[in-house]
Length: 475
Image (cartoon, rainbow, N blue to C red; front, side, top):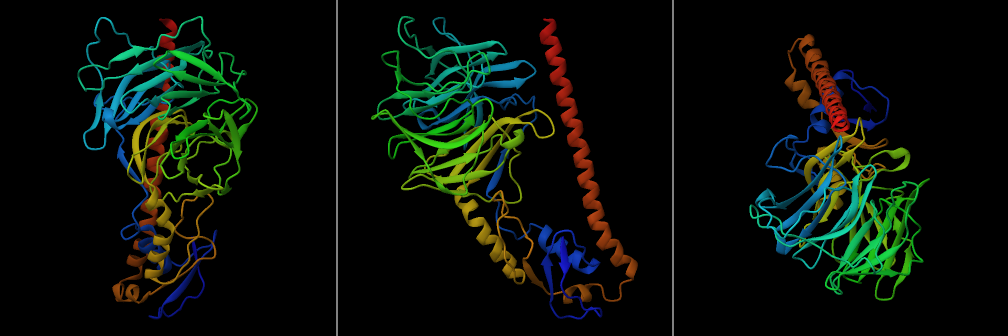
C-alpha cells in the first residue's frame, strides 16, 4: 500500500506526493486515488500474456485437461499437434488434437484402417515434429508400473479422417534405449534424426544419462557417447537449427534439482556446458523450453525449490556468450504449472502454452491455452514506467520474478488531488466514507468469494479423482 509523504490538512488543490512503502496506511482520499489510478487497468500497457481458451473439463470441442502430454508445431500438418497425457485418477489418453490459430481445436479422430494401429495411451513421453509433416512419439509411462520403449509416427492429420499412425519396427536384435519416461528429445532437420536423452526407468530411483539417435528410414537406434550432463529426468530441451545444437536445461537427478545448461553438437558427438549470464531460470523440473530462432530460447514454468510450481518465463540469447532475461508477466498470466507444453509460433514473437498440472492448492490438470508475446513482455516495464510518469512522476522496477509490478518500495508518484475536492464539494462526509471504504470492502468480499469457489472446485476435482481411482481399483 502507499504511505502519504505530505498531506494538506485543508484539502488544498496542490499536487500531493505518495511513496510506495510496504505495511503503511493511507488516508481515505489517497486510497481513493490509488484505487482509481493504480488498480484500474484501463490505460495500463497491454499484458504480455493473452488467454485464448479455458473450456469446461467435459467440453467435447476441446482436449480434456491433461499433463505430461506432448505437443509439436508442424506447419505442414496445420498447426500444433497434441498427443496423449495424464488426466488424473488413472485416466490416460492416446488421442490426438490439432490447434490452428485461425480455426481453433479439432480432434484427429475417425476410423482406423485395418492395417493400422493406435499407440497405447501414455504420458511423460516425447513427441517431436519430424520433417515438418509428421509427429514422432517415443516411450512414456502407461501406468504406475508400466513403461514403454516403442516409437510411433503420425503422418495424417486431416480432421475427421482419422490419424494415420505407423509403428517404427526396430529389430529386437539391434541396440535400443530401455523403456523410460520423463526423458527429453529433439529432431535434427538437417540429418533427419531424433535425439533422445535421460529419463527414468521403472524404479523411480534410477535416472538415466544415455544419449540415443533414431534413424526412422533405417528403423535403427544408435547409442552415442555421453560425457555430458549428469543423469536426470524431467529436463527441458530444444533444437537450435541456427548452429545445429541441441540444448538441454535443468531436470531432477533424484535428490536434488538441476539448473545447468548443456549443448550437444551431434555432428561432433561432443557436449559443452554453457555458463550464461543474467537472470537465469535456476533449478527446475517439468518445465518447458522452445527455440525461437536467431539463437533465442524461452523457458517457462516447472517445479522449483520445495516443489513449488512456477509461472515465470525467461528469454535466453544463446548466441555468443549467452545471456538470460526474466520476462515481465503483467497483470494477467497463466496459473503456475509443470509438465505442460510450450511451442513457438514460427515467424512471430509469440509462444503458446497448453495444459499441464498445477500443484498449487491441489493437483489440478489443465486444458487452458495461452499465448505470450515476447516483444511485449520485454517492453512492458518501460511502458509501465511511461504510464506512471504520465500520471505524475514515478519509477518502476521489476520484482524478483520479472513480473513488472505496478509500484515498488521507494517509488514516487505525483498525483493531483484537486479533482477529488471538486467532485466531493458539498457532499456529506458519510458519502465519502461509504465510497472510500465501500469500494475496497467490495473488492475484499469478491476476493474471498472467489477463493471459496476455487477451493470448492479443487475439492470437487479431488473428490472426482479419488472416486475414479476407486472405480479403477474395483474394476
